Image (cartoon, rainbow, N blue to C red; front, side, top):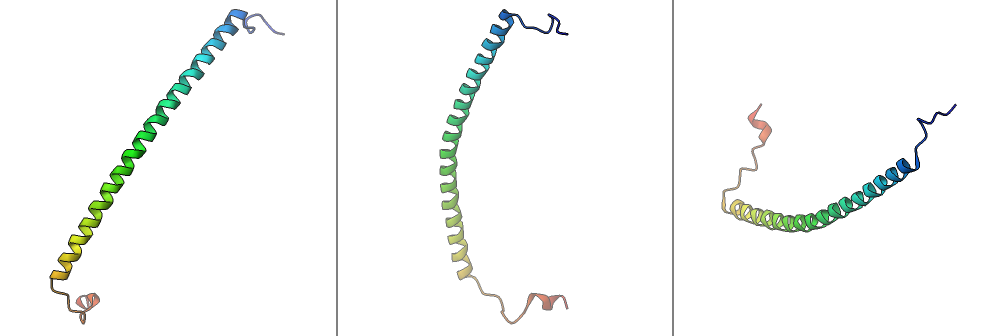
Length: 84
């Protein structure tokens, strides 16, 4: 048995459809904004990665030069011999 309390009026149906349409439009706008942010962020990430790689290479170069200038350790003594 169906009561009239469960049946939506035409006005309620139109209102629900309008709300759904607005919700979908807002979701599309939000999606576009997120895409735009993601695209600008990815270019910033690329720039940061390039800078990070340059710095890493420079640090490696400096440490390599530093290690060439210092005395080398005695290759005849092993690390484990200190503990036994």
